Length: 364
Image 1: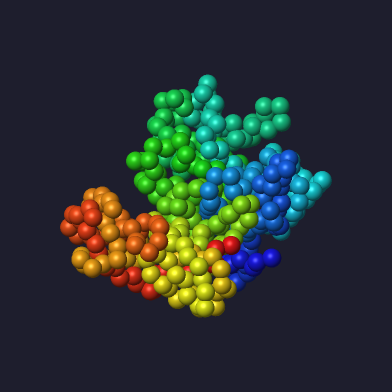
Image 2: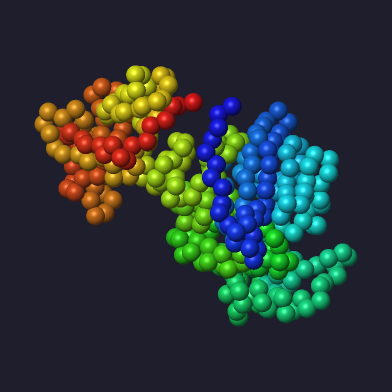
């Protein structure tokens, strides 16, 4: 089995910065839905004060892992630990309501007949509807922390998407959980609002100083929120690293491709090189066979050349310049390049690709 790159968080134990303190640990989790393997031997560790993003395409197992951590799916294989204590193993599971873990659902699941303060207070309900002492004071603290002042008597339909998100977050945090799980927290938020809301959410989460695991399929969201990113493919976590480490030295195609504007070229690897329709790239140490070349945004430059091997087949204004799309005379595929002036469709160009912005992988 291939060994994937997993970087560990460097966080200190509470009040002891010299000690590694792992708050939430999922170990070797596998989970099937009938004949479909949703998760296959996946695991991660998230430390107090860390935001770990689970990133990958729909259906890769992200939400299943989150639900297993919360106890919303029965554990079939592996272990769930919190601060070193076993929460779940096959046939031996702590019920969800007894786990000190908060969960924010994708659609927030606010009660429409309850006001903001009552929705938040619901997180304190125990037993047969009994409420914890000092509930009013605790609700007030969460309203202040989540910047919901003046909204306590409103109902969910009277709130914006961002305000609803903060109410759901306050309800999860009012129990003072030791870990917090968020499933696609911006899925129901308008795209135009997401950037500001991401900044607000990260600040609020970091102030809580608990282990946070956040599921997303949006690369910009993962990069903006995550201290580390766990990249998933077909039920497995193939790489875990910080955004900076992924940028400098990705260990997988997923790690290289997460940055906006990246492009992928394919071609055979043979004798230490990968041959693509847009050039031959060095591939030292890689086995012969199918290969992938990941090109970072801005890696390709183009200049008009009547004898060039690449033809401009389309263009778009992207501000302040243009994106031109090239075809090659020696193979299929399209390559995007930046050009200052509006390109002429049908013109030919030559290209220059920065070797430092190319990452080559075996295509397994």
